[in-house]
Amino acid sequence: MKHLVFILAVAVMLGSCKLPADIAGISVQTPDLTKVADGTWRGICNASLIKAQVAVTVHGGRIETIVIERHEHGRGGKAEAIVDRVIARQSLEVDVVSGATGSSKVILKAIEQALAEGSR
Image (cartoon, rainbow, N blue to C red; front, top):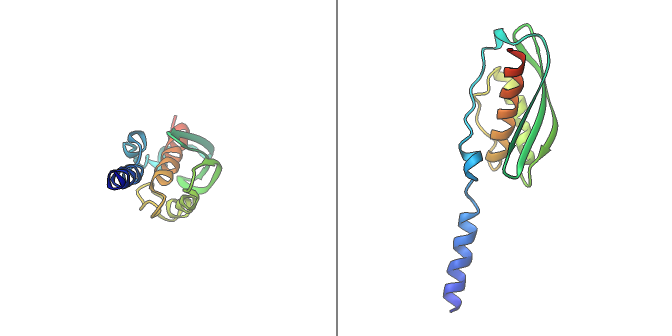
């Protein structure tokens, strides 16, 4: 009986390491920055227990700043470093922050939403 309880406990722990389907299914693409109007644009992404709201300032077809206005994340706080990668590469196609994959993807999707808002 003890072995069964141990096996079940391990199975639960391993199962909890997987990203929820809505986060795992997030794909992000960089919009054409030359089509984003100058200004500050807001984007939001809500997925499972992770939520992000960002303000992205664009000037002359370049991302100038990204401010994370809200980030509900559990243990994914270190994902906030991803904004520096995005600004440096001027692209959303950057590596996620190790150990904070879900939060990284949600922040990137919020940035994509903000840039899409500025493209309208």
